[in-house]
Amino acid sequence: MTSHHSQGVQLLEEGRQLLARGDRAGAAQVLTRARAERDVLLQAHALIEENGLVGSFTNMTGLDCRISPSDDIFHFFAGHPSSLNPLRDYFADGWRTLAELMLLLEAVDRPLLRTPRVLEFASGHGRFTRHLVKALGARRVTVSDVVPSAVEFSRATFGVEGFLSASRPEDVRWPGQYDLVFVLSLFSHLPRSTWSRWLRVLQDAVAPGGLLVFSTHGVKAADFDSVALDGEGFFFAPSSESNAIDANEYGTAFTSEAFVLKEIAEIWGPDALAHHALVHFWNHQDAYVLRKP
Image (cartoon, rainbow, N blue to C red; front, side, top):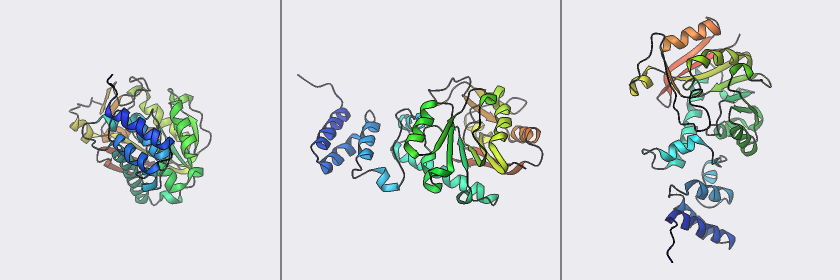
């Protein structure tokens, strides 16, 4: 009788058996091989991390490297043909985001490490959160997302505070105000019907004198995807990497610099813009830093 299990499944089972027998060295070798098989990559990674085996990313980086099985961003890397090592690419992407955020904050003389309270809004399942927690400690970090499992995972895994967002911007209930509200790659997914509304309600989350940092798909991203902006400087398509949110509510949006600056001036006021950097995050998204009076 022949087995129809893939090589990855066989390696995963062998690794579990070695762990059960207390052979940690053998299990590490077998599970590292299993981690190279796409069909069991995440299960093998979880066993290596949970048991602190040789090859653990937590041991290598000092981060909590557990990954939620529901993490759409991880699955985006795992399914992308250019990603030869999805785990390394996923963790490096979060580290790069931390570096790029720190550069933005240095430009306005508000260093991240001196920021008492940070809200990561639209935080997902912690791709960036784990890096923020390493930099600041969990007590200074709060997360929010519209997907309940994302908030639950970050609270349980990283020890941060967390609260559920809402589909309608006006339905969000902020538990407090924050010295920095960081909104990475939300405005690059919003339809026109909620884009300006989110920019407006996020004011209430920022403490007086605090900052809002957000990113957009600008002209470089639009040109790369051969997208033509409308007369207002806007384009939206109902598709994204997320499987958890309705594509009409969270698709892919592109905006011109002029559109964003006009919205900022109208909603936050003409003096709110403290800094902006085109093509800043991932050499792909524009970044804007707003200061609340």
